[in-house]
Amino acid sequence: MVALAAIGVAVMIYLTVLHYDTAVVPCLARNNPCEAVQPSIYSKLAGVPVAVLRLIGYVAMLAALLAPDRDYLRLAALAVALFGVIFSGYLTYREIFTLKMICEWRVTSAGIMVVLLIGAIARSWRGLDSSAGGEAPASS
Image (cartoon, rainbow, N blue to C red; front, side, top):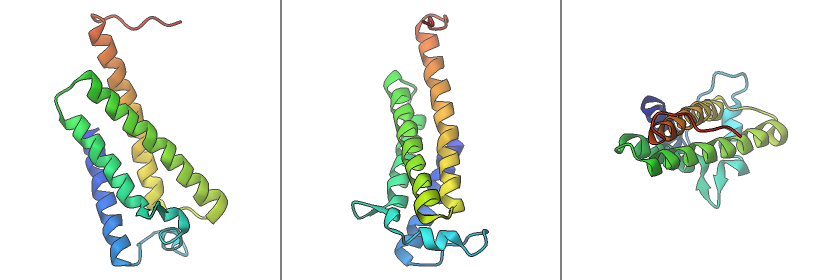
């Protein structure tokens, strides 16, 4: 999870630099959909570039993962990952149904966040398991 969060940080730093440099966003897809998605109205939220918001999320995730293991930090990592997946879902919805194109950088970030969410769920579950004396939580 630490490696994935670090990759997320690196990707978002790169995209943030490209955003402020107004450089062409490299893309392997035909007709470079990333170049159209990057300056769209959905690339900012309240004037803040989405890449910066995602960078903050990945940094928060990395901080929660690198800090000593505590229940509240597992919960924080879970909350960041859940919010990240929901936010990525919204952006993917906008890309597909509004912009009618997909940027591979956003899909990569969304994929990383989904894997981090799965890891955060497993990590939280293990935390519950160990705090219950090794017994799995009762299902209802």
